[in-house]
Length: 300
View 1 (cartoon, one colour):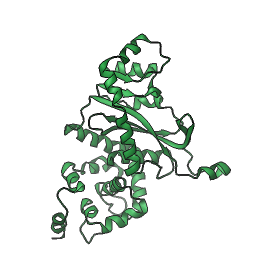
View 2 (spheres, rainbow, N blue to C red; view 1 turned 30 degrees about the horizontal axis):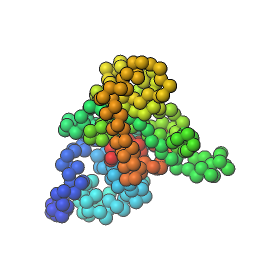
View 3 (cartoon, rainbow, N blue to C red; view 1 turned 60 degrees about the vertical axis):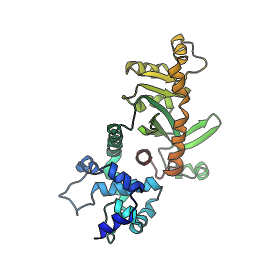
């Protein structure tokens, strides 16, 4: 009765109801089965339920501290997690244990499965991949860090540069998106001092026909990588390039069209930061930052 009532009062066009119809999240249980031992300890909440709670955090940019209360008193969130009206959600303190139990590899597996589902539904065209990175500030007081470096809580964060005169302390979220749907298809996380071009091979999605990126990715090894993978390179080349082949390639109409589509990824970064909490690290350490990056991409 309670479940029927809950379903009736939630509008059919509510995003979470549409999402529930579009994706069966039970695949999370299968991907995470080996992270649990059924013979040890008390029965755990289903990985699917824990993941949905974590997903809601990133979808609506809710803190660890607040998410338990939000799910407990928000009828739609409670329904999405599969809870009855009088059921309590998992304790917020269980979320850090869940993240640690799953590890980056399983979160990456969940992300890849969702991208695969999007491809199966024809949402990703694979015509053009746009690659870039954005900075994520570390969760530290940089002034205190400079005066008392021994108290710096995040040992993995590093100084990097947004532009030549704009340094930041933290991480980089390296991202590839489908130019037509603007869905994120690849993600990688590094400390802030890692050069964008060095991560390119990890961001190239093998299914795309063409890849575009800014001048930071212009290197012989990256152009050769795309050639080996039989993909058209639309990477913008530096002014001092002497290669006639690369210069001629830049003049091709389809390459110029692809390069003009690059601002789409800047919109995606703005969306990630404004709505899904990727402007600042939630946690300390590269591993937890990588999980944050994956979850923000899933929510986005």
